[in-house]
Image 1 (cartoon, helix red, strand yellow):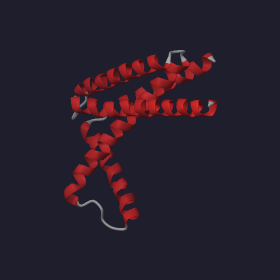
Image 2 (cartoon, helix red, strand yellow):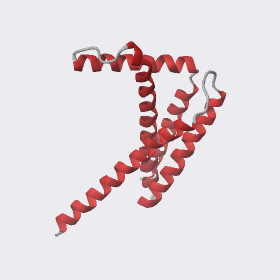
Image 3 (cartoon, helix red, strand yellow):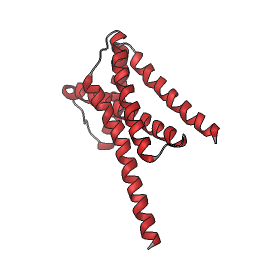
Image 4 (tube, rainbow, N blue to C red):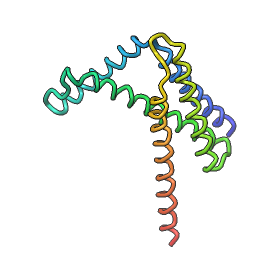
Length: 158
């Protein structure tokens, strides 16, 4: 059982390193990578829609959207990993929610501070709020799933 705890915490720290790596990329490199992903996503959308979906005028806005979706996704995953690590460590559900929120938001803040030292990047309180969408999004999904599971168990016992 202890081995599972170590694996859970190792996954948390590996994911934190992944986020740190992305944040360590210089602004121009980060922009180019997100632009490439946006072009790829655009091509998929155009293939499905069967027509040009994104014009050159709104391509920059689409890239911005892709970057912010990446923020939400990164922190959704981090929250999930934190929650599972805390749960595996024997914390109650309430403690897992509180600790996950605290540590995930603190990491989001520290990530923005880290970007002060990266060329072409800077801290953004807005990005912390966007990261928090992923954090509290995971916790919302977990809470709804827990309530659904409890109500389903109650119906089975009736």
